[in-house]
Length: 425
Image (cartoon, rainbow, N blue to C red):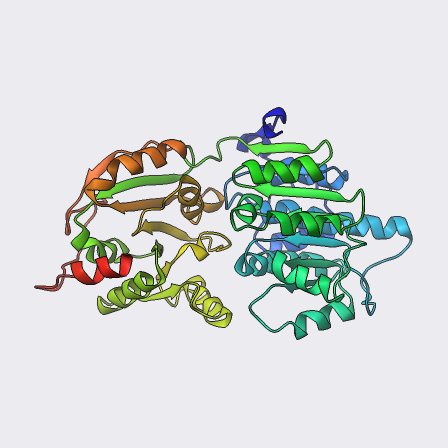
């Protein structure tokens, strides 16, 4: 299916001088976008917003951080206003029990919250209401918001299906549905739940599907739910040609924790990826021992703790976040300029999603992957599938890897081999 769809590629130079107003967004929405720091549209936004406003189904492909949330959020709000006007009704006044007219599906709680932080002020500017529906927290507040009436529901498939089955959520009037990070949704096993949810929305409703990669699961959704979609891909938005510098360091395994500390001992925000929760906690403690402010993010933490730790990185209270792949999606911090993969990923899509945490919105970023010597062939195959060309470098602790002055020295006599290998297994 996807092979038969031709994507319209848009170059960054094609949107020079174009404004959000030129794309068809109203004055209130344009004003709020400016307040959010979006003065002019990114390529994916310029490409897709007019198609959304026309009522077309859209398939948008671009790397994480290319501006997809505004690309679907702003025109969805504008479209709902047009539909209200056509029906002779209006938003702005909350009506008890008003059924939602738009649904935005995300694979994780973190991403749902990130999306709401962008979409909510846009919706409020024209008198529309949003709410978040996700698991891991009591449902009472979410149910209360639905009872008061909402226009846009932003949530994850599991809790949304729970509330549908409880007859607390009715999607029969949803006329615009967005599926964000569709490939990750499928990777997490949400393909069938998403299909069931989409079948409960209004027949003939508009579908917007955004994804960084397109695979079989995404093809299934496109084939069933999108009708003659406008297909857009941002030219030059792949990992290889972006503003991200990729490097692979071959190291001694016993030096891994100290190497992470050496690389993270710097100005700027750093995101470190670990394969296991235990190693994430161990690395966090190790960084703190060296005076590097760090927090962890993984599945053993409750939602409030995860939110608080992420906020500490966003606010600059800490410089380093050490995370398992729970953070590979849905973490939006604009100024992360270094990603360290303390444990190399097992598949290329995970590599792309991890590295998508830096180099966002055209900013420069670095991705460093640490591997032992016996993993070179496997890493070469992975990078080949990701279409990234990287020279492998053999690096020892204390080497000047950036060509800059690096002040770091491991504590005398410290040997972390046994602990690190035990935690990483």
